[in-house]
Image 1 (cartoon, rainbow, N blue to C red):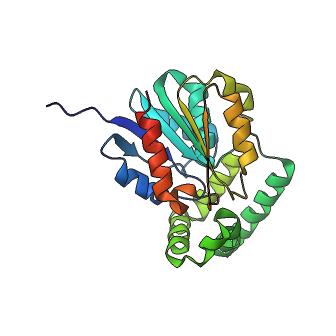
Image 2: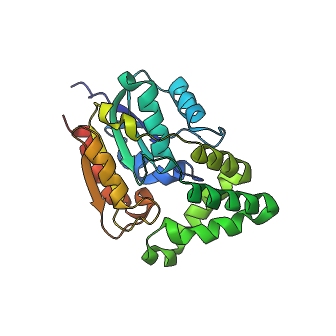
Image 3: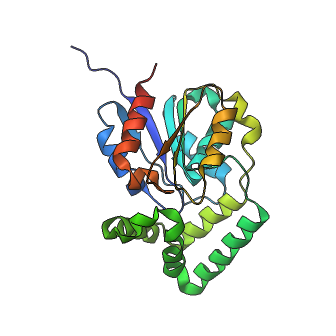
Length: 236
């Protein structure tokens, strides 16, 4: 019997995180997909990140992006919609940065440049994960280790990219591939209302909220996220 072909699956991490964000999905979707997690921290614009991903991607693929990864996924759709078989947007946002958000980011960047990067990262944890997860030492250590691997320079480049990202809302109605929009119910950074906005604008999109979950859904509720991505990959 022939083995069914596996779908190339590009998993795009949020800021300032790396492939470990998708560890469960990479491991448990490998029977139906060919997962790959590009490094995004070498670029300082969403456009450059998307261009690098496309340069190294197979001709056709499914793409899932969490937070900043979602911004990159939407840029990929703008540049090469014919190459994207499926789209999943996790804990992300189609809007551009607000002036208030940009000011907050620039303050954090200034502190990071002053040698206070780890303090900035630790201070942000309360908004990244569900309150109940703050006592999960293994999870918190995993997140902090990812941030350390990305490092100050990578963090600064990624913040710059996020600050200068475009408003993606005007292009949502043109997305024609099967789309999953997924969000932690308690996501404090990109709350459910922003995901409902995207799902309503993308034709045929499926909106799913995960209970007891903050912004880092693929780490906080890995089994649920993997199951939803499996369903998304297998749907006709």
